[in-house]
Amino acid sequence: MTGGPGATESEVAEALYALLTAVVRRTPRDLSLTALSTLGTLARSGPRRITDLAAVEGVTQPAMTSMVTKLAAAGHVVRRRHASDGRVALVEITDAGADYVAGRQREGAAELAVLVSKLSPAAAAALARAVPGLRELVELDTEERDPADERR
Image (cartoon, rainbow, N blue to C red):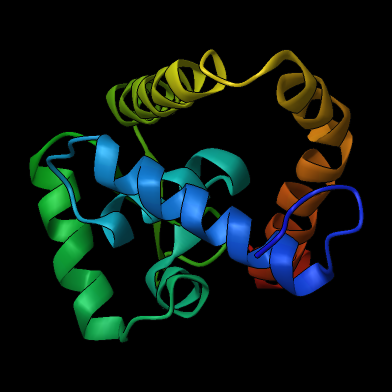
């Protein structure tokens, strides 16, 4: 992989994937990646049905039910009845869960900052120019993972 200004989409994707892998490896965690992702989804999109969460996170409904039970026991989420349909339960992130997600994001960003600080000035400037594109990628992922019609 060459990187650089003429990098192909495949080379960019490979570099981003390798960076994500490094961040996951460098950041200790006490929850599974799926549990962390579920908390992130709830923090972004608000309360969700377990079936919606399972679909968004790519796990079975029984697996999500088990995970939500564990997250609730840890104080990260609560189950509430849907306002207009009492038969439906919604999973909602708690303040403690939101604080946990924010803390994890700060820790991950701090790990990346350590790496970024070691870049050459030219590489750091190139990375800074890429920030709008990186943010757009996050927005695209959010739109694909959390379509509005699947919420609540």
